[in-house]
Image (tube, rainbow, N blue to C red):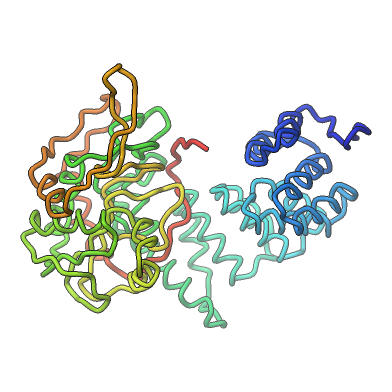
Length: 438
């Protein structure tokens, strides 16, 4: 099974990962392991054990060592899968947990751990199939709830509604919040369905169903080449900031929301955008206060807010909704979503550079260089946003037309289910897939 020298795996799929570890490149080895899904579990465990030792993850090292010695026994398979999930490498857990469930099909704990690993990887259809395979042995809380949850995220609303109708009121109050959240998801789907296709390319529709977020703009690049309306890397501009604020204004009007102020969050980017929003919306700007009603809270990037002084406290306050409060985020990371989900988002990106940060530009020699950050006062940059050109980027011509009227028609249809409940983190990209870089 292994060569004698350093127990090197003989499987060709694992050679590249082993070579990365020879060079001390643990992240590189983990990337290569993602490509080695068909390699024998025992051999994969040897490589994972070596990577875990290099990273100082003793729990995973021990579990991998035990699995390498006994790759066909349930307990080592489960312990290894559990350790992989805990260490953030759920893709490595899935083959082991899947085998553990096959060998012990009646174990609810193993099934739930496998479902958790599938969820971490966004493989919701496989989570659904694993839960359905339990048949009559499927419990209600949490198992049938998880089936509904994953059916929604796989885009199968018919199955989700059918299974949701079978769920009784949970006997354990711990699940009441989850039940209410799921009720809101299906209510949003009911209002969005008549005006949005909710297919595997309907980014705006699914963002609303999953998290209650109104998505203001689609990326005009690469829609049919894997991006489906999301950005990968994005260098922002004053023009795009203004375009987002104007779309926010249209959204508020369509929803018949009547805020009386703009609330400024503590990070620099949010203060800049908030000052511009106050001008665009014709409202007074005030520092954020948790209990203020009928206000638009403006965030440039909620992850930046979380890193600011008092940011974690503010994020916690935003989780629970205040009456009449609308949370707008301009640039939201879809591959690592923020701790709270905004009610309105201009765009979704994997990586973005704010207009006032040090972005890339063309140098005098024609090459690309990094420019300098904009050190002007926040009010000056806000004024530049208000005076920018909001004309949409024509893009590559392959993205479906997205005039503001289409956005406002959508909002008018769903406004009865908008701004409801908490702002729980949206940890999945859902039924609409987009290409990403590692």
